[in-house]
Image (cartoon, rainbow, N blue to C red; front, side, top):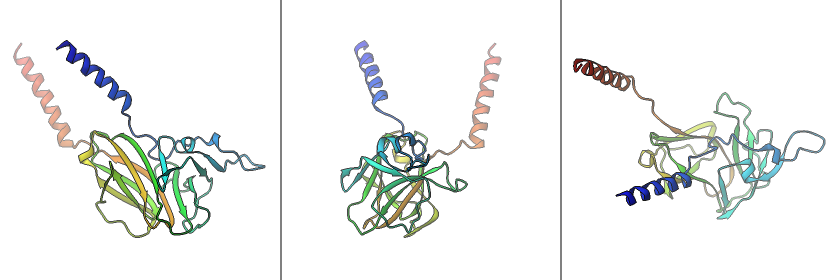
Length: 225
């Protein structure tokens, strides 16, 4: 029995160290000190290691790791067809989206080699939905390789603010691989703004029910005195 307890404690410790929560879901933690300022200015602009601009995330293009992305201090327009780059930039109207930064993919010609943005972590136990907001072309969401279908089909081309919600209740409390893949053929702009787990708040009835249980317990304990 003592041996089983020790093994259980060791297993719990190992899992707690290896497992981790998802981080930087809103792309809010870029290390801009890694980006050199433009000549003659103090404004950072240019490329930096992905672990500096996109901590917590991994990125692949056509199955090959991407090691650098760019930081752009201004809004990248959806009709921009420049070099194929992935850019993190401050979204100018933060009244619409949570946080400040967004992440964009740009492709100037059709390609069957898409981007995959992925991270491994634990989905909160109480989470029922995953919601992400985007502009331009939507993304394919996968959990552990399974393609998830949004509750409402996405438009072919999103407006400046489009939300998609997915039922993730069957994954709640599990450590999973979360992946966002660009739509193929990969052409045009994909901009993702926020990724959030929706956790329903306890209802008023549930709170009142707990209060009555507590009150009943107090009355019962007094009656036993």
